[in-house]
Length: 138
Image (tube, rainbow, N blue to C red; front, top):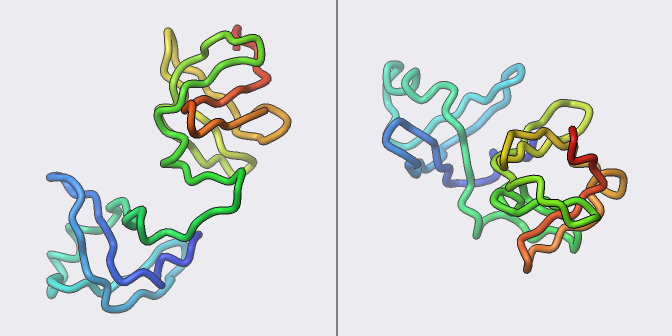
């Protein structure tokens, strides 16, 4: 887990969309976090936020070394085989423990492991394309 506690502003995904919250304090408890947020002063307000997705504004994230990508950078990229067969567009990424998985949306849904150099041969951010060594029948 990234050290999300070092960021002073979080974006939480609520029913109405993403909302910014100023972070007062954060501590890890088990597999979760306990955070004090500005404007959240009672238990009912806090419970309403439990389980919400947390994001950090992209401009606050550190630059990654060449060849590394945030998941958000991969979403929407076209995925093609080394032979040029289109498999679909990255709709989302999944963390499975063993390796990350791209969920592709095309003529059908495909799950393709994001294993660099074995499955993922090239990520071209300018062309918004990922080239993979993958059987289109899978």
